[in-house]
Length: 272
Image 1 (cartoon, helix red, strand yellow):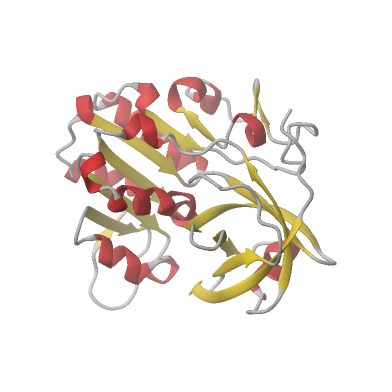
Image 2: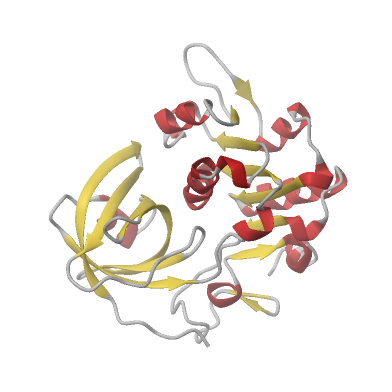
């Protein structure tokens, strides 16, 4: 079982709006810091007097032990976190779960495929690859959003174009000039994919991940080089309560990041 870590106080160093219902908060230790997080891992964030939820890190601030979390307001706790302002304090525990296996991607082309808020756990991967361009092959980032207004990290995504191929699509177009319209999997047709040299990291709605991973394998990627980040109703974050069970896996402990070779068949069973 994963070790239970008591929450530590973290102070809000910054908070800003990403979209109409999504905000990012930068948290720094108010005293003792948690162990270092890896891209893809998550923390349990406790909003005092409201409750706690699991949230993946969306950026790592190594200089001061700071962490950035991006939160969409969909419930009482996430709404409370979206109301945080600089100087506020939350409780933080972690790191929990498995991260993206960047070691397996070294020397390979890296394909990042994100749907909606699924870009948040993948953002530290993009940062890591851009910080070490000699350690990886070509970086390609595919991003899908419901509408242009729902696209988080808009300016940062544009800055990635200097060092990576970036393609963005939306499900429904908005006013003004239009880019690509359609689900994110349609962007795969635009790629000059080198499957024997590629690793793919995928995060988003489960149906999107299922179709993307299956499409990539059809195009020649071996399943163990396709990583997905899965989500279930995580409560304890330590593998005790069983709420995040997916077949034989407890995703707070065995995930959230797993190889597609381990979950391909599980993702075909809807009730799991």
